[in-house]
Length: 630
Image (tube, rainbow, N blue to C red; front, side, top):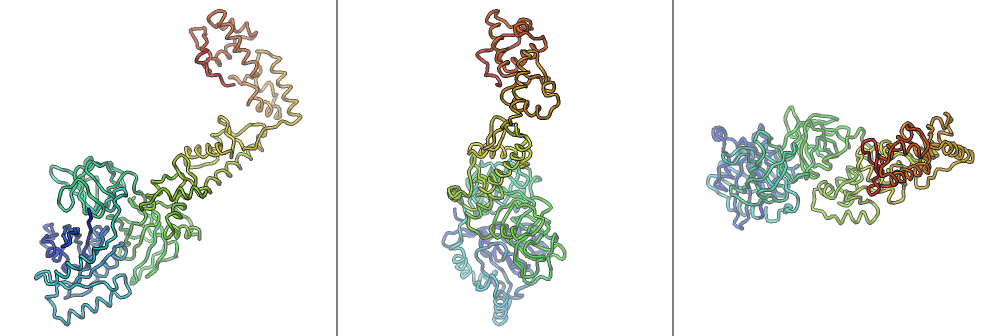
């Protein structure tokens, strides 16, 4: 199950491929053009078993500056690097650039291999070794072991094998429990099998028949077959060079830089917040929206660099920035990246992603920098809190995906017990977010009550619209939570402040009595709301207040009391009991009204399922009747 990936790096023609062939017996230059020109163009892959039994996957990368993007695609995901330097030439420009690149990729272990020692005398070799040690002093490579070899005679290979044992003995293990993720560095078709992709499985495990997704396009695929080190396997594990035969997708739909991963386990984004550093020797200064090439995973994308902690980033600077991309990529927090200029082409910097799905900021405030520092270096619990604060209604899976760590839900439970976050329907929100929502809702409701003192509450739909939150469903969940916890009142479709009750003034009480008397005195010869209020504002307000409880409005804005309506319903029930059917003329005469108003009431009965039409007549649905609206 254990597998470690070792990659080569170094200047063109310094013997990387020859070293790998001498070590493994396998020539990683497979293209005809590579053999013709004598240089590596594409990535090469093979494996090697150490005396201890540990298997090393070997990634041989091209050294020519024109193929740096291929080198970067292979270097991502390696655990240890062999930096190859030819004794007859020493450190060359591409050696230095490869070293710069490796410094940004989070590689755990390094070994410098001095090749072609047969081509120089002892004195020259010592000068080259002294130059190497001087060049790496003060860098991440200071103190790195230097092994001397000749790939033709295999001189020094016993020592090299021993150093590989030491180098890889305590490599930090990758997580098998995370969801699977593999950056695709090659895509091709095999006759009889179809589409095949290769890469280093970064996390988790993959089994045959697994259903995965190819990002950033979100193409659903199925694992048809798996190979690790040219052998068919049922499962592949994090840290292994893996070939996956995918069904349900064509070769033309995929490209290097895509990611094969579990569903909803990565972020698809065209904007990332990062912690960066700039190489020490560069003469470039990078200001806002400076155009660069971003290399992350196995992808290469045009990007614009927006410094946050600096006005301009220059040689040796470290800080925070936002990177905007022309196309979407699929990444996670903690992924390493490299930046290269477009013209002239050179590696200028790199760093780590600290937020794969940030907001786009207009200004660089102290609060923004504080937030980035939090995401960069705080504890898991602090980062969880910050993430939930900025992403309300997050699930545990989303929080864990953002952290890109094996974390337990207990950390969230502790934050919940301390009142920092709340769990609502298996989703987490920050307490501050809830309070902001609550106070905003109360402010809207109090303003509404002030203007509408006799209305029991504000229509829920109107409140949700005024709150103007991006997700209506989440807004309704929050409102329901506030009501359940006695922070607001929610009655049917009306919302009010918890302490609000409409109260009539003495004058309004008199108007109420007058209106009720007028309505009742008319019997079932109904009046409209306009006729009742005579365009008097205060009468309109009192009538609206009465319509909440005491009155009922029929189509055409005709008004009757609740008692009148119930009495009409009782009359209908009595007529049905006497005659077995309810006829419009009988009902009209029984309540002493016109055909128009009788029909209006019967249609209301139908609407409430109290009655059903049978031709021109009606029957009662007493068993089905749901109690009406009063």
